Length: 296
Image 1 (cartoon, one colour):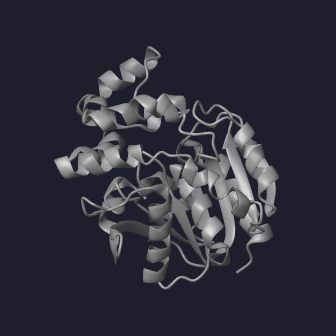
Image 2 (cartoon, helix red, strand yellow):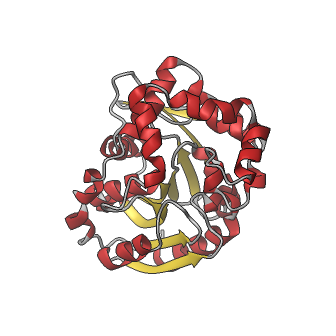
């Protein structure tokens, strides 16, 4: 799926939480993919290419991100995002799903799993916010910019001048998006525009983007600890070891906490968004896990 196909295939689920953008590919039992920040459902395109013969792959855009449309007063907390997932599944007539989450989408997937284990055939988590181990210190300045109304100043230069952003990254300077990939060559000008332009397209969208960062409150995942300790849904954890945001210890915390967890797979060169730039390293284990543990 290229960018033009992504735009052409976008659909919307009109639910209580908003007008939720999503794309889907493939046939078979449904699998729902949940991305992180500041990206959108296009993050999963390479996994769709590899999994669409086994699953009906659906990727939503979270509230406050991507191409989803919400009211200015809409709650964008991780709890509210998890509720939205249920609304979208209801809208699509889906009872049970294979759920896959990355980054903040992984925390949202955990919350959904804790509250609705009966709706899951399986759960797959990659590098993500876990228990009380977030927000990562690297995002605290973004939360402060969000409070101060200056968030757009952080991301606008990367959108306006991608070449300068690449130069900054090559000098080791903190640069939005670039620190989350091992292979930064995938960050073409077109991809940067796809991810960042909708977030900065209007004062209302900037406000929604800021509210997403301000929803980073680990009490939301601490609150589900007891439920996770009773979660017997088959679970796979795949963790990139070069992620600067989420340490590998949290992969094993999940493995030790969730009774249904089958194994942890370590991806040597994986950074936060490794399902996008190292898709084979993820898809191989995902498909094998589904074959073993998620029979239709």
